[in-house]
Every structure is written in C-alpha cells, then in structure tokens.
Image (tube, rainbow, N blue to C red; front, side, top):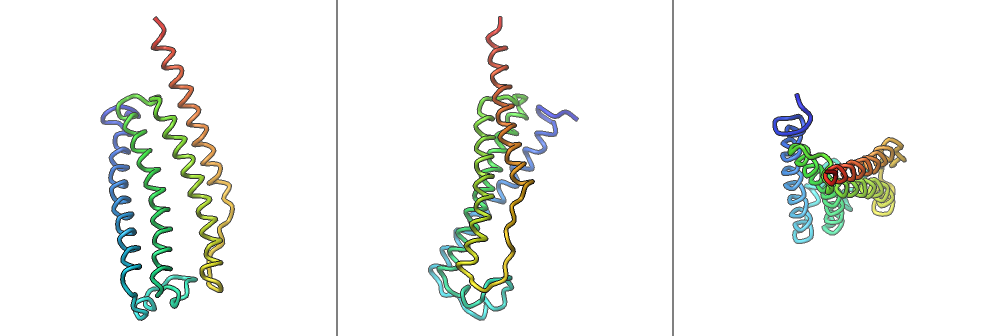
Length: 176
C-alpha cells in the first residue's frame, strides 16, 4: 500500500483523524454546556456523593463554580488536543493530495509543537492547582516526562525538515 496520494495509508489516517476530530468537537461542546449548567443550576449533594472522583472532596464538588472551573480546565485541555488533531488533519490532507512538502505544513507542525508544550505545562499547572483547590485530597503527582519532551522536540525537528523540503521544492520549480 502506498504512503501518499488517494487510496493510501495517509488517506486512511486522514479519515480516522476526521472521525476523532468530530468526536473531540462534540466533547468540547458537552463540556461547555456542562460548565454553564454547573453555574446556573444547584447541584444535589446526594448525586455528587454517588460519583467517585478520587482525591476530590464531595463537599467541594457541590459548589457550582468549582465544578464549572474543573469543566472549563478539562474543556480547554480537550480543546488543545482538538487543535492538534485539526492541524494533523490538514497535514494529512496534503499527504493525501501527494504534496507532503506544502509550505503550510511547516507552520502546522510548529503550532502542533507549541500546543504540545502548552498541554504538557498545563498538566503541571493542574497538578499544582489540585493542591490549592483540594487540600488534603489524594492526587497523582505529575512527573517530568522525558519521553513527552523528546516527542515535542521531534515535532519541531520535523517542522524544520518540512521547511527544508519545501525550500528544495521551490528551488526545483524555479530550475529550468
């Protein structure tokens, strides 16, 4: 099976990314609606006590603004992942078209790298925020992940590889 062009592996992956992207947009919408509902409606403490959320005291979860804050943070995180998936869809669209070194792919890869950095730093901030928001609760410590930071570095290196490929393609097009 081919890697580029219509009917290739890249076109199959583009379809998968399209489906995941739609699901992620739906999830963001649900989180936004839930955050607004948490602010507008009173939450029954009996319902909250039935929910099992490790490390989060049930009495704090009955406060609408706390739930809205949690849902907003989760929504922003999911929104960041959705943005990464959207950029990947655009990159795979150029791969399916048989044009991997499209100049816009450099910008897309850089944005993916920046969003991955933001998501990683957000994980650290969420861990620190748990200490402030839910003192005394059990929580998992966010540990520095060498593999995450290495992957982010690889994305930025790939952006430069694509930039060089686009430059070479432009030079080849100018050659008579």
